[in-house]
Structures are given as C-alpha cells and as structure tokens.
Length: 114
Image (tube, rainbow, N blue to C red; front, top):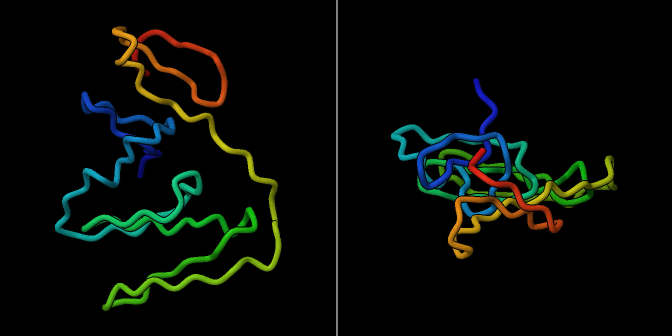
C-alpha cells in the first residue's frame, strides 16, 4: 500500500494533489482498480481505474459501482458530516520557463519539483 495522488510527467510519484496528473490515468491494468480518498477530483473513470469518491462525507454523493456491468449508482448524502477543505491545487508552471510549481489556491511559488 502507498499514498499516491499524482504521477508527474517525469514519472515522479507523489502524495500531493496535482489536478492535471492523477495517477489513475496511467494505470493500464489488466486488473481494474477501484479507489477512493480523492474527493478533490471527484468521480474518475478510466479503462482500468475507477475513483468512486464523490464527497459523501462533505455532503456530496455516495457512489458505488455494480459489477460485473460496471454500472455506477450515486445517492445524495443526508447531510454534511465534515466541513470540506479543498487541497491547494498544484499546477505546472512550465509556461514560466522555469522548473517550478504554482499553488493554485494562493500566490506562493515553490522552486523545483516535489
């Protein structure tokens, strides 16, 4: 088991949330992985990876996948059980011509890759 949220273009695995680089987009099976604990991205559907976290604990939805047809079913949460705290979104800053990361929910700039 490992805590992995993103795989960067250079192949670096990180537990940090990078919106454009979810690890599941690269999972090529052949087994299908069902996972959660990624409410910031919401429902994720790839050929061999399905992220079912639709934020039920934050007042969103509870989502299940019915097998073998892989049919998704969601129900609304009855209430908000925990106050939602969005993770800072880390975006590539390649357009700046530098190897750095830009925090999307603030004006902070970090040099280097995590």
